[in-house]
Amino acid sequence: MLEIKDLYVNYGNLQIIQGVSMTVKDGEMISLVGSNGAGKTTLLKAISGLKKINSGSIVFDGVDLTKLNPSKIAEHGVVQVPEGRKLFPDMSVQENLELGSYLKGPKQKRKDTLEYVYNMMPDLKVKAKQSAGSLSGGQQQMVAIGRGLMCCPKLLIFDEPSIGLSPLLTDIMFDIIEKVKKDGVTIMLVEQNVQNALKLADRGYVLEQGIISMEGKASDLLQDENLKKAYLGM
Ligand SMILES: Nc1ncnc2c1ncn2[C@@H]1O[C@H](COP(=O)(O)OP(=O)(O)O)[C@@H](O)[C@H]1O
Ligand SMILES: [Mg+2]
Image (cartoon, rainbow, N blue to C red):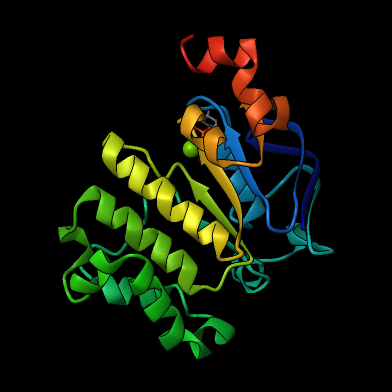
């Protein structure tokens, strides 16, 4: 489904992504974990067409994404739930959700998808008319996930959905992501919360200073002594 090969991305003279190769297969859930500043968000921006790449390739279902603009990339079904949610705080919850379905295909299915989102996250239905900015952090993250779902993704990419949330809300968030996966959406989850992210995933990648330092079955990575020492404080 998604195949990234030997990708390099720079900010000016700074090499951020330095030869990353990774794949996400249809129906899989992949976790990409790594510390703050490792380059995770930069990699995701490159996938979504928000950041120009220097070299390498990003191919989704046979289409070269590096030649497309962000909205064309979303049309192909590659959708992001961005870091920091990026909601419109003065607009209502429902308006924020509807913004996710601005493309032609998703717009036609807007009513049904909205119902699907509200069924998955009933809290949002209760708050539909409230301004998004008045919601708690956890609920705002749900709106961001809902907005992503409104775009009818094939591949939904989450950038640190649990950041700033309490352990309880983090669990709720990961439950929602699991449900989305069960409904057939392929998932790429980017997290600093290594334990939780790998527990849910099929496979995992560890990004360190723009380089993939480890990859494999998520359950194997969780047993890896180096990973335990570096990321799980064991
Ligand atoms: N807009 C930018 N301009 C210059 N450098 C940036 C920019 N965005 C991120 N960086 C740098 O790129 C590196 C990786 O950042 P980022 O991809 O946000 O990491 P992560 O998401 O893993 O925390 C950091 O050193 C950061 O300072
Ligand atoms: Mg980031």
